[in-house]
Length: 123
Image (tube, rainbow, N blue to C red; front, side, top):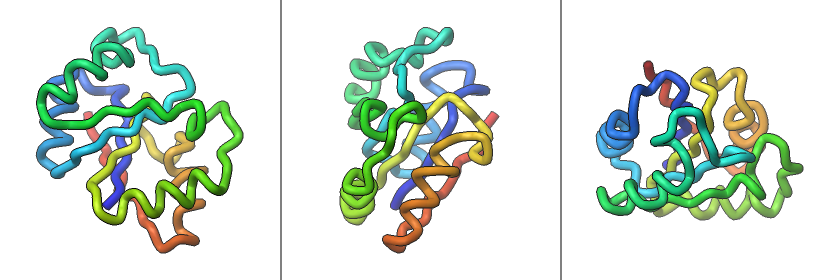
């Protein structure tokens, strides 16, 4: 199963943790081209240490799935296969999936592999 979330309106990392755990998400894929935020708890280094401590794997994949990169079809195909036996969530800053590459690029391209992305709208 594949989810997506934007952290823009979340006050802190603990709220993100609660949402991910409520959905049974075990892996968070950070698809930001630049894994940094003015909200310090959403910076890559913080996520890398905090999330595994609460049982959620964190991976920054912005170099291959980021909004400022040209996303290769092989990477979309790998993601489609990878999520079959894992509960995965794509994360970016933008809360509105209609305004983010999570939906407009990644989710649209995953459709041809029979994968639907469930967008978590929070805030």
